Each structure stands twice: as C-alpha cells, then as structure tokens.
Image 1 (cartoon, rainbow, N blue to C red):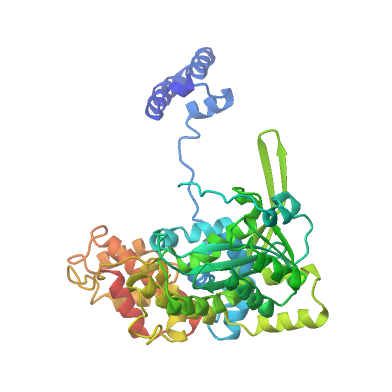
Image 2: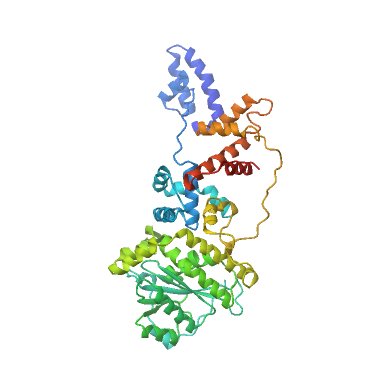
Length: 511
C-alpha cells in the first residue's frame, strides 16, 4: 500500500492520525497503530516514532568540505590539454610523467597540495571535473578481391589469435587514405606500422600508393626504430602482396605474413591506431602533391615522439568467451616506451639511450609543434596549397602554454578538425552592477576565501539596499566570484598574477 501513496498524502495521513494517536488512551493506541502500519507499510517502530512526532524535524545538513578545488581543476585542464585530450584512464597514467616534464621546462609550478590531490584523483573524479570542459570544448560498398595468385598463396596467414606472447619487433602494417571522401586521382597515403607487443607506432607519408614507396617507408622506419624490426604483417592489398615487397623482406630477413581477406580483426592493433593516431592527428581532408606530403611528414616526425613517449594506451591482456558472453581484460595504461623498457628486449645501452631521450623531450613543446604542423595541413586540405602565412607566426611556446588553461573555451583545438567559428562577443549588454563595489568584495574574498557568493550578496544588499537585492544580481556575482577564484588558482600554478589582469578577466566573465 505504501508504494501507492504520494508524499503529500503520507504527510496529511501522519498529521491527522498522529494527532488522534497522541490524544488517545492506552487501549485505542494499538488499534490506531495497526491501521496506520497497514495503510503506509511502515515498520512498527518507525510508525510509532512518526506518530509521536519525533522524526518530523529534518536533519540539519552539514556542509561537505570540498576536496578538489578550482586550483586542482585548472591544473587538471592544463594536463588534459597537454596530453591532447585523452581519456581519464590514460590521463591518470600520464599525469606523473607530464607533471615532471612540464615542471622541468618551467611550464608548471604546482603547489604541493595541488600536486598531491592531482596524483590521488581517481578516473571517475577526472571525468566529473572535466565534464563541462569536454562538453563545451568538443562539441559502404565492399571492395572486390583480387584473384588468388601463387605469390599470395605462398605468404603465411596470421590471425588475431596468433599474436600470443609475441616479443617487440613484429609490426602490423596498413594504409590510410587522405582522399577527402573522393577516391579519384592521386592523393597522399599514410603507411602505418604498429608493434604488436609494445604499441609503438610509426607513420610514413607517401605521395601515392605504390610498392617501391612502401619499401622506402620500411627502410626509413628501420633506421629510426630504437629496436630491431623482425617481421611485418599486412592485409591483402596489392601494394603489399607483390614481388618487390616480398623480395625486400627476404633480403633483410623480415618475416612477412598476411591477414585473412575481409577480416579486419586480424589486424586489430594497427586498425586501432589508424583512428587514434592518424585520423586524430590528420583528420579526413584531402591531401595531394609533394608539398602536402612533406607537410604530413613533418607532422609525423614530431608526433612519433609525442605518441610513443607521452601517450599511454590500453592493451588487451585476455579475452574469454563463455557462451555468448565475451569478457575482456586490459592491462594498465602505459606508453609504448614504458612497455618497450619493461619487455627486456633492449640491452643496457639501448635502454639507457631510450630513457635519456625520454628525459630530454618536452611534451608541451612537441604538442606545440604538432599544432603548427596541423595548421599547415588544414590549409592544404582547405585550399589545396600551402598557407600564405608561416604556421605558428606570433604563437611562441610561452603563449601556447598560457593558453592551455582556456583552450577548451575555443572548442576544437586541432586545426585539422576545426570548423568555421563566428566572431566572439566582446561588447556589454548592460552596465556593470559591481563596478564601484568590486574592490570591497575582493577584500572580503581575500580575507575569507571560503565565503559563498550568496553571503556576499546579502552583505552588499545590507550595505547598499538602494542598489542591490539578494536575488536580482546574485547570478552575476556568482560568475564574478568564480572568475576571481579561477585566476587565484592559476596563480598557484603559473606564479604571481597582476591585479589588473584579474580585474579584466572578472569583467569579461560577467558579460
């Protein structure tokens, strides 16, 4: 019966029956109580307390102390932007490495308490703190197979299940087209190679899909890899299955295998990198010509360091099928460099050289170079030619670092994925209501950092009742107080903040 009674009905029933229950004698009380329990479904002891009026007063809520304040949130946003907006689980794994690297190059100066709370933060808390930031900042026909040939049949087939306990050096290879959705003419291709054991990914820009260019890409990757290339596994593309590529692999003692036709899961490792690395960096625009190929090569020269040294990724550790249910287990997120060092495939000199290279890299500087290269590629995709202005003019590394805290407000940060935006609003629609009293409010905030905007509004209304009310300007004051606290949080991260900058930012947020 209790489930069919609304809250209002229950309150009226408690008020009416309770008064009769309290004024009745000892013989009538049990009957009233049994009737009340039958109607409401309450426990007998709870019904006695309710009818006696002992639980009518609501419990006083004590304010909960805020653990992750605005300083922690601002520092988290900067780390998220510096990590190229990766997911919370990968970001948590990358935070210790990013913080050390950014502080080494002077991009961050975290307070000890902010650092401790950042490193102790769970992935669910990271998602909750970045929810509004992410929301505002991020807004076929089957190909006909070729006829089987003797060469194709001579190449061994390797499926997804065959990659068990493999050591670093075995790569899956694939092509990514940059045709802009129109597969006509000649356009740029990306040759992608992903190491199955460590996730180490190399990308080579090719002006066309051609077998001699493929072996040139193999030679380039072999020269740049910090560990030996042992074997490659490709799909059934004619650019891979030909005498030129097969003879090159035999001459250099490379094991060459292929996947089954129309079974993309056989190459799941490289297919995943096609989206998370190539498409994420380059986008879907059309690139053609030698100049666009050179611009894409410049992007890959920088991104290979950023992705392999500072981008943690998941790795499937087990897959169990029970009937129709499939259970997948993943290892903890780690960078390809960390997995490579943990595998033990490198000798002491090679491991020391790799660690030295990692310690000398600045992730923010690499991301800045990636953004400049993306600006150049975006111009090629939009106009088909190089940009008239050199990419990155007027945007040095210090300006880029200062913009990490507010980059999410501009929406998409990657030039290759950016859409046309409207002109930002810069004018005020009404006069500033706190123009003359803001210095007083700022003194209150400095003396009482934890005071709420509602309390400040009550003080202003009591001080100037002819100008302020407790409700009319409350939302405006809340925005101003939030902007002030945001700038104070930045002071803990970047250092001192000039009062003029603080006042100007607070005024802009009240528009």
